[in-house]
Image 1 (spheres, rainbow, N blue to C red):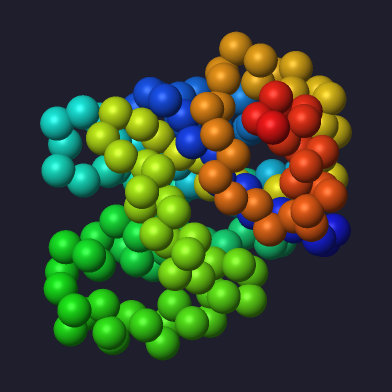
Image 2 (image 1 turned 90 degrees about the horizontal axis):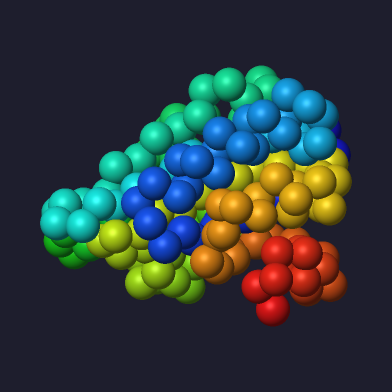
Length: 165
């Protein structure tokens, strides 16, 4: 597997991430992008917490699995509701995520950005043909690239492609 990239895109509507995930799956079938794993978070207005969904039509190699997404989304959206005792118990588990840039800063940023009325698409990809992805995403309009573990130069190029600079 080529080096995989984790990116998180925020959308200004609760439906945006789901629509974008459908587009990504199509691009994967067309071999424009290698989609290893993805999950969406949708937070409708008035809901107490977001709904999460893992895509299941991803390639086996490199997929993170439901336990990863469950743990990540639990740390971001649900642990703050459960109190300090459970939060402390998950601290050691969260420590293992820092190698890929998922640390307290990441968790807090996602928690601050993904709020009622928005959605987010979490994607693990490689071998991306950026210009074709940009063309496919033109009408979907992600409002912000919230996180990527790309190098600064790669991230800058990605932001340029999507007009998020």
